[in-house]
Image (cartoon, rainbow, N blue to C red; front, top):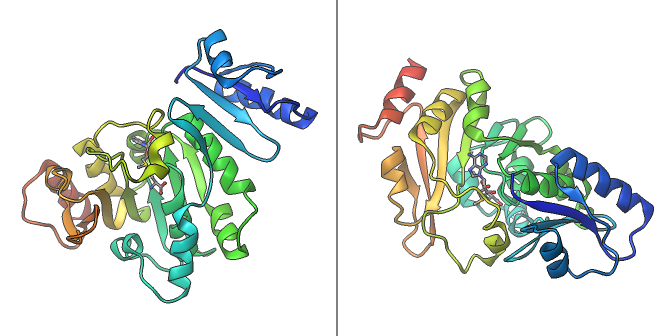
Length: 279
Ligand SMILES: C[S@@+](CC[C@H](N)C(=O)[O-])C[C@H]1O[C@@H](n2cnc3c(N)ncnc32)[C@H](O)[C@@H]1O
């Protein structure tokens, strides 16, 4: 767990202070009274890299890259487009619909999970995993409490179930075929800096490449398919055994799929295990 403290805005009310105390006990960071200190001074005085900030109705994390807070971000526009009859690249790759069960292994800021949740509806299920406890906390809090959006988007947010865990460990606990699809959107091997929405997450996010063993477990747990998002041209698709299904020439990102009823010819351990799990 990274080195962080918990504090409030200047002049907090008592509910903020109580909540800040509770979060500090839950996550282990020390609660520090804000008084009139700047973030820089608080970090210096308490030798902290990051600050978990309790505001009146929301949480944020102050990192070296800026302030990270929950917002539906691109999910709002993507859902608007879907409602208008347009497609969505992720949903097309996942091939999910009303009632589907999705395991999203990389929650991040939650935009993809919200769109998945909108599509699968109340009859479906979206479980989203995040290894970093601070990211998991602020996004989970935002999904439950954010209120400035349309009812169908808020309902989609409320349905996402967030778990603070390593996806590799979680997958080991899942039964065979227990989710329809398993999705990975890891931090790209070559970051796209212009996607500035993700910049504040970088100092906190887990940047390790996905292990082949994790993909093999995902193949066991997914009933239909495993999907990977990476930067266009990434060698991760071949290394991990994914077939690119959407890698638009002019797009910076691409989607790869391991389909349980169709195996690309590249012979990788992960695919071998995938085959075994369905036979
Ligand atoms: C690129 S972001 C995901 C963005 C997300 N799809 C969205 O719509 O906002 C990747 C996230 O996955 C998390 N992550 C990386 N490795 C993980 C693991 N083994 N288990 C769970 N989460 C992980 C990172 O900490 C980071 O927050």
